[in-house]
Image 1 (cartoon, rainbow, N blue to C red):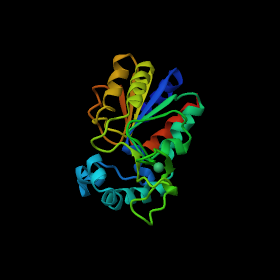
Image 2: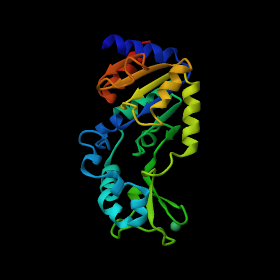
Image 3: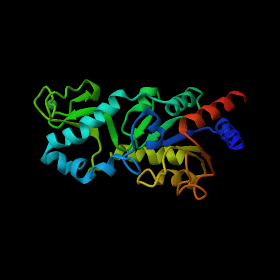
Image 4: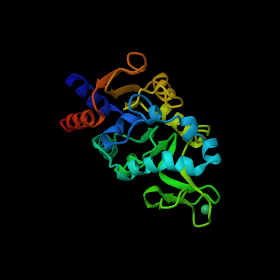
Length: 247
Ligand SMILES: [Zn+2]
């Protein structure tokens, strides 16, 4: 384990262009439950009924009451953890250029990373379905459901719902940075869901090192990633950065 921390510190010091790909695992320590898997929201709810764009269009009040209010409570309170903060430290050391994330909690930006590509949009903001005006989620008054814009339009999460396209700009840019990087950190994601799953593959094919920080093996381990550092994102990030300080 310690050898791998050292290895990651050396690889980061040597790298010229570093990209991080993150998923739910980096935010669980901030109290954000994962959607998929054990304990995830989709164990309790059928996403097709409450997180599909058709369900929202049909009955926005229902989706707000069941899903959006609960997520708002969680996201309003969440603070970045050492995993997010570690990625900010790397950026400040000029050892991280871009974060690609599957998360919608906005915590990378809250922590201070400046270039964040979000595959699934962002739940930290709501937008009007009529005029597209954006409102910070924590400022939205939920005494009336569904909440409305000044113009009278209904507010919806600025996140990608089921049945909607991944924003094309996010897809293009992430392919680009995955191609250009010489080191990709995969943090807190098993990277089984497309299009995120493709990014480490592109990075690998175009000559980058792929370093995984995850609590368990994933389909990337031993196939795409050069090595896996097993552990919690925050703890591992702290140790890598400490090791980099010794260089
Ligand atoms: Zn509006």
